[in-house]
Length: 381
Image (tube, rainbow, N blue to C red):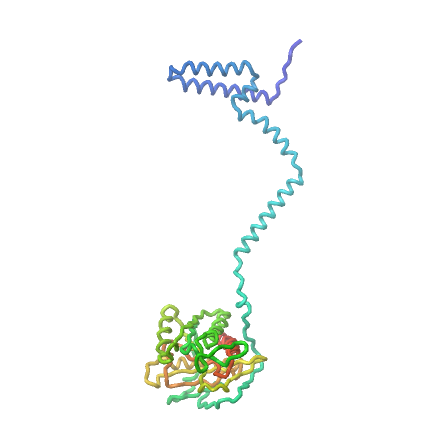
């Protein structure tokens, strides 16, 4: 009988690899130690060790001992069988988790690029509505002495200039829409109310700017910003500690601000003094709201001071008031044209706007700014 040994293809491949590796190993050892006679015995010993391994073990175990990486092949084969046993549900679960992770990542990116939420104060800003019934409801009114008019816009001309239709026609184009607001008389205040009580530090005056015309300027700034305009609001004291020199102080402020913030529209926001009459509160009712009446004061060069652009300032006031008479008739009192300059030579469309009088409350004046901002936006669109 013949003894027949059945060799698997896998074993044959291992034998061949083992032989090849052994040959390379012997060749490398021979080359490495050939130049060193003193290491001949070590080489011989290493070769004998390898020979003993071949003789005392099967070729397959020899390969495993000599090249552990090859030995891992057989184990890897077994691992592959285990991997094949992963259920289809596990694969689907893994895919689902991957997709969920990706979606969360996308959501996280989208959330990080969203615009920051507006503050509560910004969210609560109420803009003016149009097409509302409007009527003047002033108690103890002051007589309007008008001597010039353009359409529905009335003018009280206190100068010797004869105003022609050409001088009053608001044929201007507003290109620079930056707006500068300041207060020559920062401490001018109003009649205290339950909502806005304060302790006066003078005759309808207080150094607490939260209760003065400066607070009204803050409201106008906020309203105009809602329409997208760049507004600089300066809240510096110009009439404190000394009232004298207020216009000199405010001129320095304006000239300094214009160096870094060029603006054509320059508003010096005041409160009408009118002799500090506590019973005079020029008021207009718009819808269900009461708002303090507003008045433009436009200076000229009639007093002898250099002021070449006063007529442009006047045209701007006429343009604003013309639109106001269309939207909210009675919101403005007649324009006052004076002989003084009032620092209005600093801008192309510089002006004084007086909001209310001593008899008005602060809340009435704040309401006015909502409608003034709407009117200004309409002429600058």
